[in-house]
Image 1 (spheres, rainbow, N blue to C red):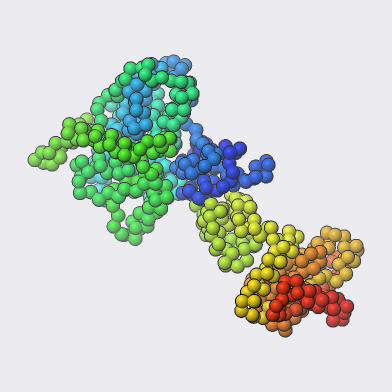
Image 2: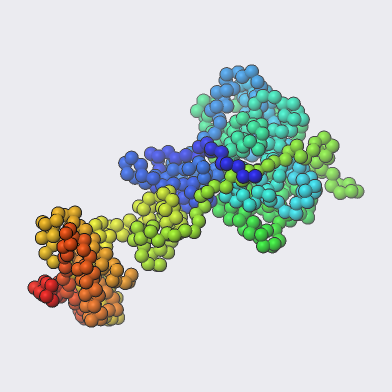
Length: 592
């Protein structure tokens, strides 16, 4: 079922005063339209986030050297509501990654309960439920392959950019929502639930109507730490408390890459599981997976895919200030103890205590999740006619359209042109365009005096290395002062633009043409004989004479002089011969 896209709240945003317009955010974003360039009041380029397209992957926050990107969560709202002593109780559920980011986790719980939190539960239990429910759904629905979805950014991407993949997503809620549903339905929990979270994108999952609005706050580790630091919270003043409720299995391993696979393999050791992590690998792999399914190629039984490199332990809502070795040491030690307590070998196979309990007391369909096709009209660039954009950018040759530097952030001239056509960027983001502007005459869009000088030196350098026919045409408008005096400078400008258009229409992309100054034009023609150059000049003159751009049917003409490069020529020598030829031609004007 297609659902109209709900209005997305602004999660990630730009501090305009800190943004330098370096385009790093564009380069790391897995979607094309989430970062949009604009001119600020002072005229400088800035990059803003469009929440409609953003999937809250957080890559732009990580890559920004200027701290220009930030995000919003519910930390302030949570503590404000808690301070008002609400009539309904408040429960906190903590992500498994909390154990590695808060060395005094028990005392943190003591502080939260001192402030009024009634109970605190371990989302690792929700991870145990999610694994069990997936395995039961896989059996009952006969799903040979599926993509796991504990990661909210992955779900965001699939719903908005790859809805064809939605039938392949595991039809089970995330560990957070599995725990919330378990507490509310099976534990009769009332009141509000706050998620102690490593993830910015969880806010969107919390507000998704398909998750039942079971959770009210997304309190990220990073914002919580900043609040505690700002208020001078001393955790040593509070008792160390443990989680409430039933003990978890090994669901805590969900927070590291491949953790879901570890929980599945407790009872399904031979299952083919593909583990993928990090923005630059996860989203391309999802497309690859879909393509393989379409063509009937073999795909894994389960894809354990996470947005963040290092998993949720290095989530977008964390400070990423922990060591992966310390994480693995703590996680493995806890896993070993849990397996000793809860995993038994029997005559019929492996008995895993949490799954045995769930089989007796829960039904997997209680934890089922639906997804919404919220495909965006735009968001990922599509092939379209970009000729107008290329012309505007002065990209007239295939080579100029495939420079593909990374200055604009896209790494592709085509993708930049697509962004420009959609109004999501400005021309100055293209370094090649900026360079061309320095060498361009703004009235005619041909090269200016400086640009022509560089081109002349370049062609002569090649000529000195290996001589070839190199022609130069100098051209100007006859009696241009009279045109200006009679019809005004606006019409004079049109006359100059007409000459420029005629030059472009009768020269090759490999030629260099420009406005030398005033009403004078220069055309440099490599691999062109003198007769060929004269023929080009005549065609341009005829085009100018037949242009009929002056009022009352008046016409204007042009004169041209041609010179050929000679051994030992400097740029000045070459120019002066062509300029003398133009001077001679001016003597004859229309009679020449």
